[in-house]
Length: 110
Picture 1: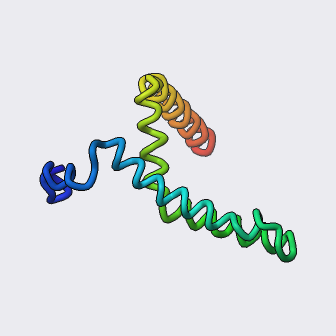
Picture 2: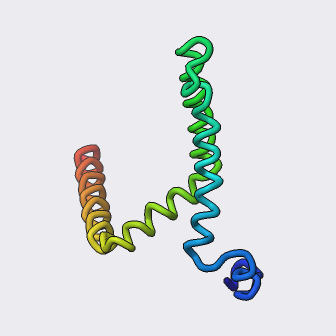
């Protein structure tokens, strides 16, 4: 809350809890997805053009709301207890990547 510049009372004036905030944010994302998919879903016009238009719109929604989608995905991992396993996996990937880079560097230097 401190980073937002708003008080807790202000937050609770608009949202009952964090779930309410997420629901509001995701409603906006859902609206963009549904609206973006309309050209293809309605089946009107040339199919390939309609699909291209819908996919372009969906990518735009991803760019515009990516931070919300990423936050929800990360929090779902925490909620379902997968966060520690994911952090361990990321650390393994990081170590493997560094090992591979070092090996390539040594091979090029030799």
